[in-house]
Length: 76
Image 1: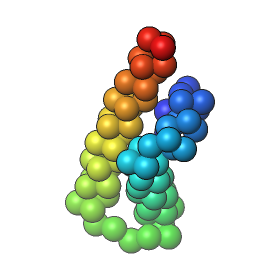
Image 2: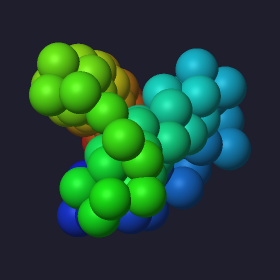
Image 3: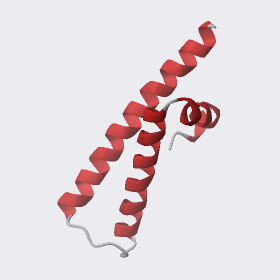
Image 4: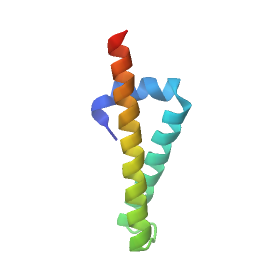
């Protein structure tokens, strides 16, 4: 997720527990989605859509936090 911000993600995961939790939850959902796509986990279409929506919300929140972090670093 958001590999172009690798450095900021690493720093935020160490400094911000909420960000670390968001990042971890996104990765968990990503694994569930892949497991479902590859037949290791059986989910309904509705469950798959819910996972995709939740992943997108978490990604959006993480991106917002990353951009705010970058802005704060730039102003220091």
